[in-house]
Image (tube, rainbow, N blue to C red; front, side, top):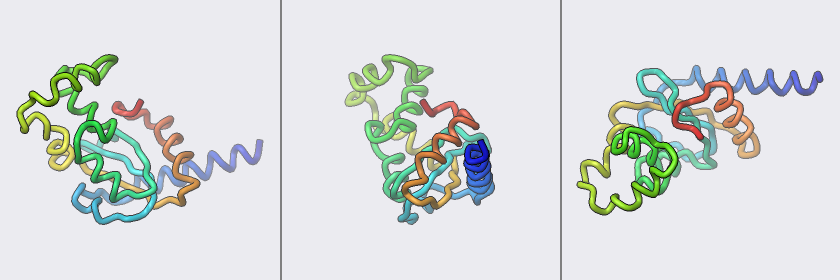
Length: 144
């Protein structure tokens, strides 16, 4: 039981360090070429938690096409359909080509203009445990 308590204590410390880190904009994120866990915040509310072995690449994916990242897709589905529930990805796939460019770029613009993120550089083998712990504790609305 002591080992379990120590692991939980370590995770709590790392999560606190992540949440207390500085806010960054997404342009700054394209310069962070290392592994880590990140939280996306809008109006100081955590809306998504993710991880990557390369934060720079993940930020680029977040700002790309909806097919490249869950958060991007969910933001776009919510804007177009009012939710991101079951079946919305298929609906989005069907209409995406017909959407005006302004709608296609909604999620990218939303993330760039209204959101910021925090991140914690993390050893590759410790990324997933911290990400899952943070999601379990904070329960962000856009994580599965």
